[in-house]
Length: 323
Image (cartoon, rainbow, N blue to C red; front, side):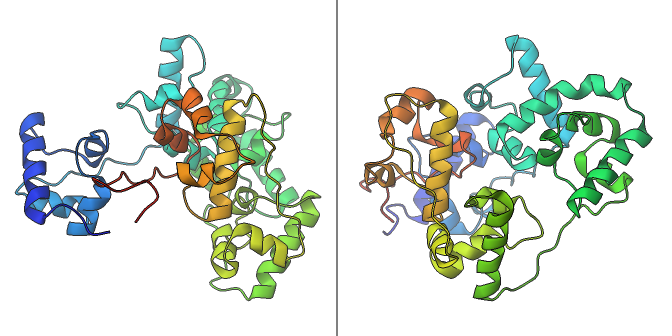
Protein backbone atom coordinates (compact mmCIF):
# COMPACT_ATOMS: atom_id res chain seq x y z
CA UNK A 1 0.00 0.00 0.00
CA UNK A 2 1.37 3.41 -0.97
CA UNK A 3 2.36 5.73 1.86
CA UNK A 4 -0.17 8.50 2.57
CA UNK A 5 2.74 10.83 3.39
CA UNK A 6 5.00 12.79 1.05
CA UNK A 7 8.68 13.28 1.84
CA UNK A 8 7.92 16.89 2.74
CA UNK A 9 5.17 15.81 5.16
CA UNK A 10 7.49 13.39 6.93
CA UNK A 11 10.30 15.92 7.23
CA UNK A 12 7.96 18.58 8.64
CA UNK A 13 6.76 16.09 11.25
CA UNK A 14 10.36 15.37 12.23
CA UNK A 15 11.20 19.07 12.55
CA UNK A 16 8.09 19.71 14.66
CA UNK A 17 8.96 16.80 16.95
CA UNK A 18 12.53 18.07 17.28
CA UNK A 19 11.22 21.54 18.18
CA UNK A 20 8.93 19.99 20.80
CA UNK A 21 11.79 17.98 22.36
CA UNK A 22 14.46 20.66 21.98
CA UNK A 23 16.73 18.18 20.16
CA UNK A 24 16.63 15.62 17.34
CA UNK A 25 14.22 12.78 18.21
CA UNK A 26 15.28 9.15 18.49
CA UNK A 27 13.62 6.28 16.64
CA UNK A 28 12.33 5.01 20.00
CA UNK A 29 10.64 8.36 20.68
CA UNK A 30 8.89 8.18 17.32
CA UNK A 31 7.67 4.65 18.10
CA UNK A 32 6.18 5.93 21.36
CA UNK A 33 4.04 8.48 19.52
CA UNK A 34 0.97 6.69 18.18
CA UNK A 35 -0.23 9.91 16.54
CA UNK A 36 2.79 10.07 14.23
CA UNK A 37 3.82 8.00 11.19
CA UNK A 38 5.46 4.63 11.90
CA UNK A 39 9.25 4.32 11.87
CA UNK A 40 9.04 1.94 8.89
CA UNK A 41 7.51 4.79 6.86
CA UNK A 42 10.68 6.85 7.35
CA UNK A 43 12.88 3.87 6.55
CA UNK A 44 10.95 3.20 3.34
CA UNK A 45 11.20 6.86 2.25
CA UNK A 46 14.77 7.69 3.30
CA UNK A 47 16.60 4.38 3.75
CA UNK A 48 17.54 4.88 7.40
CA UNK A 49 16.56 6.91 10.45
CA UNK A 50 19.75 8.98 10.39
CA UNK A 51 19.27 9.72 6.67
CA UNK A 52 15.79 11.05 7.48
CA UNK A 53 17.23 13.28 10.22
CA UNK A 54 19.94 14.61 7.91
CA UNK A 55 17.41 15.36 5.16
CA UNK A 56 15.34 17.28 7.72
CA UNK A 57 18.42 19.35 8.61
CA UNK A 58 18.77 17.69 12.03
CA UNK A 59 21.85 16.22 13.68
CA UNK A 60 21.79 12.40 13.31
CA UNK A 61 21.60 10.36 16.51
CA UNK A 62 24.82 8.80 17.67
CA UNK A 63 24.61 5.09 18.26
CA UNK A 64 24.45 4.17 21.92
CA UNK A 65 27.38 1.90 22.87
CA UNK A 66 26.51 -1.75 23.40
CA UNK A 67 25.89 -2.88 26.94
CA UNK A 68 28.23 -5.38 28.54
CA UNK A 69 26.69 -8.37 30.33
CA UNK A 70 27.62 -6.81 33.67
CA UNK A 71 25.98 -3.47 32.77
CA UNK A 72 22.78 -5.32 31.84
CA UNK A 73 22.79 -7.24 35.12
CA UNK A 74 23.59 -4.11 37.14
CA UNK A 75 20.57 -2.36 35.62
CA UNK A 76 18.38 -5.33 36.61
CA UNK A 77 19.81 -5.37 40.14
CA UNK A 78 19.14 -1.65 40.57
CA UNK A 79 15.53 -2.11 39.48
CA UNK A 80 15.16 -5.18 41.72
CA UNK A 81 16.50 -3.16 44.67
CA UNK A 82 13.94 -0.41 44.05
CA UNK A 83 11.07 -2.90 43.76
CA UNK A 84 12.21 -5.15 46.59
CA UNK A 85 11.86 -8.20 44.31
CA UNK A 86 12.77 -9.49 40.86
CA UNK A 87 11.29 -7.24 38.13
CA UNK A 88 8.93 -8.51 35.45
CA UNK A 89 9.23 -7.96 31.69
CA UNK A 90 6.30 -5.56 31.86
CA UNK A 91 8.00 -3.43 34.53
CA UNK A 92 11.13 -3.16 32.41
CA UNK A 93 9.03 -2.14 29.40
CA UNK A 94 7.73 0.80 31.43
CA UNK A 95 11.27 2.07 32.08
CA UNK A 96 12.52 3.93 29.01
CA UNK A 97 15.85 4.66 30.76
CA UNK A 98 16.78 0.96 30.92
CA UNK A 99 17.79 -1.57 28.23
CA UNK A 100 14.88 -3.28 26.48
CA UNK A 101 13.66 -6.74 27.42
CA UNK A 102 14.65 -7.85 23.90
CA UNK A 103 18.28 -6.98 24.74
CA UNK A 104 18.18 -9.30 27.76
CA UNK A 105 16.47 -12.11 25.85
CA UNK A 106 18.97 -11.86 23.00
CA UNK A 107 21.99 -11.75 25.36
CA UNK A 108 20.97 -14.39 27.94
CA UNK A 109 18.60 -16.57 25.91
CA UNK A 110 15.47 -15.76 27.91
CA UNK A 111 14.16 -13.36 30.55
CA UNK A 112 14.27 -16.16 33.13
CA UNK A 113 17.95 -16.81 32.38
CA UNK A 114 18.77 -13.12 32.88
CA UNK A 115 17.04 -13.13 36.27
CA UNK A 116 18.84 -16.33 37.24
CA UNK A 117 22.16 -14.60 36.59
CA UNK A 118 21.35 -11.96 39.22
CA UNK A 119 21.94 -14.31 42.11
CA UNK A 120 25.53 -15.14 41.27
CA UNK A 121 27.52 -12.36 42.98
CA UNK A 122 28.25 -14.47 46.06
CA UNK A 123 29.84 -17.15 43.87
CA UNK A 124 32.89 -14.92 43.45
CA UNK A 125 34.00 -15.71 47.01
CA UNK A 126 33.61 -19.48 46.59
CA UNK A 127 35.60 -20.10 43.42
CA UNK A 128 39.02 -19.06 42.23
CA UNK A 129 39.61 -17.94 38.65
CA UNK A 130 41.27 -21.28 37.94
CA UNK A 131 38.28 -23.23 39.31
CA UNK A 132 35.81 -21.20 37.26
CA UNK A 133 37.81 -21.66 34.06
CA UNK A 134 38.37 -25.39 34.71
CA UNK A 135 34.60 -25.79 35.10
CA UNK A 136 34.10 -24.17 31.68
CA UNK A 137 36.73 -26.40 30.07
CA UNK A 138 35.25 -29.56 31.63
CA UNK A 139 31.77 -28.65 30.40
CA UNK A 140 33.15 -27.87 26.93
CA UNK A 141 34.87 -31.28 26.86
CA UNK A 142 31.59 -32.95 27.80
CA UNK A 143 29.57 -31.06 25.15
CA UNK A 144 32.23 -31.17 22.45
CA UNK A 145 32.01 -27.38 22.06
CA UNK A 146 32.01 -24.20 24.17
CA UNK A 147 28.99 -24.08 26.53
CA UNK A 148 26.28 -21.43 26.49
CA UNK A 149 24.87 -19.49 29.45
CA UNK A 150 21.72 -21.62 29.28
CA UNK A 151 23.72 -24.85 29.45
CA UNK A 152 25.58 -23.70 32.55
CA UNK A 153 22.30 -22.65 34.16
CA UNK A 154 20.95 -26.16 33.53
CA UNK A 155 23.70 -27.59 35.79
CA UNK A 156 22.67 -26.64 39.37
CA UNK A 157 25.89 -28.02 40.86
CA UNK A 158 28.08 -25.62 38.85
CA UNK A 159 28.88 -21.93 39.47
CA UNK A 160 26.23 -19.46 38.30
CA UNK A 161 26.86 -17.60 35.01
CA UNK A 162 26.90 -14.34 36.98
CA UNK A 163 30.10 -15.51 38.69
CA UNK A 164 31.80 -15.50 35.28
CA UNK A 165 30.29 -12.16 34.27
CA UNK A 166 31.34 -10.56 37.57
CA UNK A 167 34.86 -12.00 37.48
CA UNK A 168 35.71 -11.69 33.77
CA UNK A 169 33.40 -8.87 32.61
CA UNK A 170 31.27 -10.91 30.19
CA UNK A 171 30.47 -14.48 29.21
CA UNK A 172 32.53 -14.14 26.02
CA UNK A 173 35.54 -12.89 28.00
CA UNK A 174 35.26 -15.90 30.32
CA UNK A 175 35.23 -18.28 27.36
CA UNK A 176 38.27 -16.55 25.88
CA UNK A 177 40.11 -16.75 29.23
CA UNK A 178 39.39 -20.49 29.25
CA UNK A 179 40.88 -20.79 25.77
CA UNK A 180 37.52 -21.56 24.16
CA UNK A 181 36.14 -20.18 20.92
CA UNK A 182 33.48 -17.48 21.30
CA UNK A 183 32.29 -17.31 17.68
CA UNK A 184 30.83 -20.39 16.09
CA UNK A 185 30.63 -20.43 12.34
CA UNK A 186 28.01 -22.48 10.50
CA UNK A 187 28.75 -23.97 7.12
CA UNK A 188 27.74 -21.53 4.37
CA UNK A 189 25.31 -23.89 2.60
CA UNK A 190 23.37 -27.08 3.20
CA UNK A 191 21.56 -29.49 0.94
CA UNK A 192 17.93 -30.28 1.73
CA UNK A 193 18.94 -33.70 3.01
CA UNK A 194 21.60 -32.21 5.31
CA UNK A 195 18.99 -29.88 6.82
CA UNK A 196 16.53 -32.73 7.35
CA UNK A 197 19.21 -34.96 8.85
CA UNK A 198 20.20 -32.17 11.27
CA UNK A 199 16.56 -32.01 12.41
CA UNK A 200 16.39 -35.79 12.85
CA UNK A 201 19.68 -35.88 14.78
CA UNK A 202 18.52 -33.12 17.15
CA UNK A 203 15.18 -34.88 17.64
CA UNK A 204 16.99 -38.13 18.46
CA UNK A 205 19.18 -36.35 21.02
CA UNK A 206 16.20 -34.63 22.67
CA UNK A 207 13.92 -37.63 22.46
CA UNK A 208 11.19 -35.48 20.89
CA UNK A 209 10.51 -32.99 18.12
CA UNK A 210 12.78 -29.93 18.56
CA UNK A 211 11.61 -26.32 18.57
CA UNK A 212 13.14 -23.57 16.46
CA UNK A 213 14.73 -21.99 19.53
CA UNK A 214 16.37 -25.27 20.52
CA UNK A 215 17.96 -25.52 17.10
CA UNK A 216 19.00 -21.85 17.25
CA UNK A 217 20.86 -22.56 20.51
CA UNK A 218 22.97 -25.20 18.74
CA UNK A 219 25.72 -23.25 17.02
CA UNK A 220 26.98 -26.41 15.32
CA UNK A 221 23.67 -26.85 13.44
CA UNK A 222 22.00 -24.91 10.61
CA UNK A 223 19.80 -22.04 11.75
CA UNK A 224 16.03 -22.68 12.00
CA UNK A 225 15.50 -19.80 9.59
CA UNK A 226 17.45 -21.73 6.93
CA UNK A 227 14.98 -24.60 7.39
CA UNK A 228 12.01 -22.22 7.26
CA UNK A 229 13.20 -20.57 4.05
CA UNK A 230 14.04 -23.87 2.34
CA UNK A 231 10.79 -25.68 3.20
CA UNK A 232 8.32 -22.81 3.60
CA UNK A 233 7.80 -22.98 7.37
CA UNK A 234 9.24 -24.65 10.46
CA UNK A 235 6.42 -27.20 10.63
CA UNK A 236 6.83 -28.12 6.97
CA UNK A 237 10.54 -28.73 7.58
CA UNK A 238 9.67 -31.01 10.50
CA UNK A 239 7.15 -32.92 8.38
CA UNK A 240 9.70 -33.33 5.57
CA UNK A 241 12.11 -34.79 8.15
CA UNK A 242 9.44 -37.28 9.21
CA UNK A 243 8.88 -35.56 12.56
CA UNK A 244 5.57 -34.68 14.18
CA UNK A 245 5.05 -30.88 14.30
CA UNK A 246 4.41 -29.46 17.74
CA UNK A 247 0.70 -29.37 18.45
CA UNK A 248 -0.82 -26.17 19.71
CA UNK A 249 -2.26 -26.04 23.18
CA UNK A 250 -5.98 -26.42 23.49
CA UNK A 251 -7.91 -23.41 24.79
CA UNK A 252 -7.88 -23.14 28.58
CA UNK A 253 -9.73 -20.97 31.02
CA UNK A 254 -6.41 -19.68 32.34
CA UNK A 255 -2.94 -19.12 30.94
CA UNK A 256 0.15 -17.92 32.74
CA UNK A 257 2.17 -15.10 31.17
CA UNK A 258 4.96 -17.59 30.35
CA UNK A 259 2.50 -19.89 28.56
CA UNK A 260 1.13 -17.00 26.51
CA UNK A 261 4.63 -15.91 25.48
CA UNK A 262 5.57 -19.48 24.53
CA UNK A 263 2.46 -19.71 22.33
CA UNK A 264 3.45 -16.45 20.59
CA UNK A 265 6.96 -17.73 19.94
CA UNK A 266 5.62 -21.04 18.57
CA UNK A 267 3.27 -19.16 16.25
CA UNK A 268 6.16 -16.94 15.07
CA UNK A 269 8.22 -20.09 14.35
CA UNK A 270 5.35 -21.51 12.32
CA UNK A 271 4.73 -18.28 10.35
CA UNK A 272 8.42 -17.32 10.03
CA UNK A 273 7.49 -13.77 11.04
CA UNK A 274 6.06 -11.81 13.94
CA UNK A 275 2.37 -12.72 14.28
CA UNK A 276 -0.37 -10.10 14.38
CA UNK A 277 -3.76 -10.19 16.07
CA UNK A 278 -5.43 -11.37 12.87
CA UNK A 279 -3.15 -14.43 12.81
CA UNK A 280 -4.21 -15.23 16.36
CA UNK A 281 -7.91 -14.71 15.61
CA UNK A 282 -7.65 -17.18 12.70
CA UNK A 283 -6.48 -19.92 15.05
CA UNK A 284 -9.38 -21.30 17.09
CA UNK A 285 -6.97 -23.49 19.08
CA UNK A 286 -5.06 -20.50 20.48
CA UNK A 287 -5.92 -17.94 23.21
CA UNK A 288 -7.82 -14.83 22.15
CA UNK A 289 -5.99 -11.51 21.70
CA UNK A 290 -7.99 -10.15 24.65
CA UNK A 291 -6.16 -12.65 26.89
CA UNK A 292 -2.88 -10.99 25.92
CA UNK A 293 -4.29 -7.53 26.66
CA UNK A 294 -5.29 -8.73 30.12
CA UNK A 295 -1.71 -9.85 30.85
CA UNK A 296 0.41 -7.31 28.93
CA UNK A 297 -1.86 -4.26 28.39
CA UNK A 298 -0.96 -3.96 24.67
CA UNK A 299 -0.18 -6.32 21.79
CA UNK A 300 3.19 -4.63 21.23
CA UNK A 301 4.14 -5.20 24.88
CA UNK A 302 3.27 -8.90 24.55
CA UNK A 303 5.44 -9.22 21.43
CA UNK A 304 8.38 -7.47 23.07
CA UNK A 305 8.09 -9.62 26.20
CA UNK A 306 8.23 -12.67 23.88
CA UNK A 307 11.42 -11.32 22.29
CA UNK A 308 9.70 -10.65 18.97
CA UNK A 309 9.96 -7.54 16.82
CA UNK A 310 6.79 -5.45 17.21
CA UNK A 311 4.51 -5.22 14.17
CA UNK A 312 4.78 -1.96 12.26
CA UNK A 313 2.00 0.47 13.06
CA UNK A 314 -0.82 0.97 10.62
CA UNK A 315 -0.86 3.87 8.22
CA UNK A 316 -4.10 5.89 8.29
CA UNK A 317 -6.95 3.77 6.89
CA UNK A 318 -4.88 0.59 6.78
CA UNK A 319 -6.12 -2.51 8.58
CA UNK A 320 -3.68 -4.45 10.72
CA UNK A 321 -1.94 -7.20 8.81
CA UNK A 322 -2.25 -5.42 5.43
CA UNK A 323 0.85 -4.34 3.56
